[in-house]
Length: 618
Ligand code: GAP
Image (tube, rainbow, N blue to C red; front, side):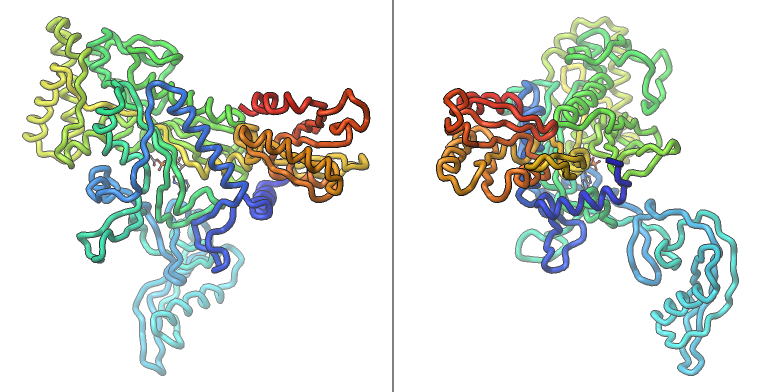
């Protein structure tokens, strides 16, 4: 079948999600609420499976990562320390006519003729506005359209029957100053904080302002010391969390892709600073081959640490932050592949130096080629962010140390022991590098020079005794974006035979069995044969402790298969007269097992069914 076009494909996906109960608009009966979504029966199962596979891969199957489940509302100082109160904002612009708000970076550049006005007057009513205003018309539109929009603008400002003043025109190329929907001038861009505010306690005062967390990560930093104490872990180790996050996005868009309420799956993986690794191991392992362009320029050779270039494999004690970063990028891509997103549908995007957050040493975005993604110059889908993997230095814990006044340093026995054995030149070099990196951080955060220098010297002194603030690698993914990517990736159309063998078109969701909402459907061939129904129910009950099972007896068997194909159920079990032994003893207590993708059917003994399915699904 021909591939449907991107927008057509998205429309089909959105329609299927509603029809089959993956995703509903939140508060739909009241007209919906922009940026909020609900997951129906199949969507809820899909999300649970995503979270479970992530949790298993990130913590249960590893020795070096533990979990956390923190509250959504936290002390407001956390958001001051993290920088969210002052800098977590998007630049937004408002339409001067309709007041509609846009993200400044999402305005498509437009060309045409701009009509400028110096004001408007209503001589009869003796009212006037001297507000300058302009309207952009695309080529070919008559001047009257601009005058109509401008008249509406001045009307809104109290000039009931406006006569426009000072009209002049100018050719404009690729301007982002006008509303693409009506040509009206937009306001200047201004920052808009994305955190959702609330008040804790009975008094709605500024003292009681709190925020719904915009990311789950900060709770991990705030609880770092508590977890370290109880988890019997040493650096390097990680803390992961899954949970809701909220952002008052200016323009929620692309279905669930940019929502105002969503779920994140985040890991903060704490590592030694490179200076500590060098002191302990003598050398810091870095990724072999050419350095990614996103890495900051190398320091002068004299100040450069001693490095040993190797490939990322299983973690080694001499790994520096670059190795850990590369390792986590690989781990995350492997995870996506393990749940059915082919590597060819993903893009590993290394942020350019000018795109990096000020504290980040490197960030890799893993993009998925959604049908609504922009296309690159070759016409290929460029991809949209599923996950960001950032090397965040020691910024986060250092910030919480400064704001809370509580030490976030760890004591590293191995560093202390190794330091004592270093020669004087190595000690001086490492001490100086560590002091400089602390000074850089403290100065950047606005500490006055004397104070910053004193603190950096103290930090370096503590380092020689085995104390440091851990650095962190942060893989941060969105559950909802991943659910949408999996739905888009699974969607397919092909042809399948009906019960009479006639080919008909079918929609099939080819979910990987690991994340499929329902793993197996059980069907009695006929609903009105009590023996078939009873046997099918026995099989349902046999499988249910191990797998998500759906029992369906309504309608022709072909229609039941089609319904499960649309739900993405990878296996179907049919109980027929052979199962009852009516066609001879050799097929008694066997069933037909149908595979969704190949539509192949095989006879399987009921006693072997659970084991077989569990193996295919795990
Ligand atoms: N702690 C780092 C952090 O929060 P982010 O890039 O802002 O980084 C991480 O968010 C992930 O959370 C994104 O890659 C995306 O999957 C998801 N995410 C962020 N904003 C979202 C939104 N408005 N709607 C849905 N998912 C979102």
